[in-house]
Image 1 (tube, rainbow, N blue to C red):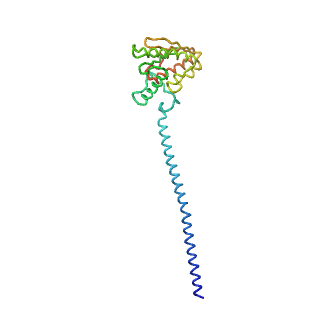
Image 2 (tube, rainbow, N blue to C red; image 1 turned 90 degrees about the vertical axis):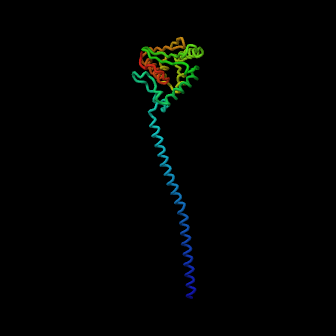
Image 3 (cartoon, rainbow, N blue to C red; image 1 turned 120 degrees about the horizontal axis):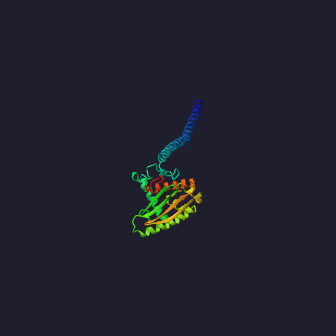
Length: 234
């Protein structure tokens, strides 16, 4: 009887031990996915932190270029030259300005129909308006001379009608002053004249507001074409 009881107790003990071992293994398996989830969670947050750092770095880099007129996509406009600066850009001080002028010239050749490097643009401010003048660099360049004259005669009519699409195409933006010149077209006159190597358009404004718009437009042209013309009224 005692022997049978002992065997019964041993069997019960073995069964209990087996149950405890199984329970331990089950708990271990249950804990493993949780640990993996925590690892994934930590990794996710780590990536988010790194992503935030990258975002901050990108924002810092963008802020660092915010003052560059070439990076603003026209929002701030081209800075007008101060008195005595003659409106000449600092092209020789940076490749960015050279690249910008090359892009303006390429778009200009397509929009105007003649070579920008074989001709010279000049923009002059006068007391009653201003002058847009384009001429060939050599007197023998008859082909470009005729194209220049055709273009200037055409844009003088377009400007008089309030249409400034051509300068928008050349500069890839609306030039400062153009919107006001379009709105005040009744207060501005445009007269085309031939010159020995090309032509000019004389602009005259009848009101102070129209005059201010014309001068703003011409100063922008001086700056973006990098002509070196004076930005003060002559």
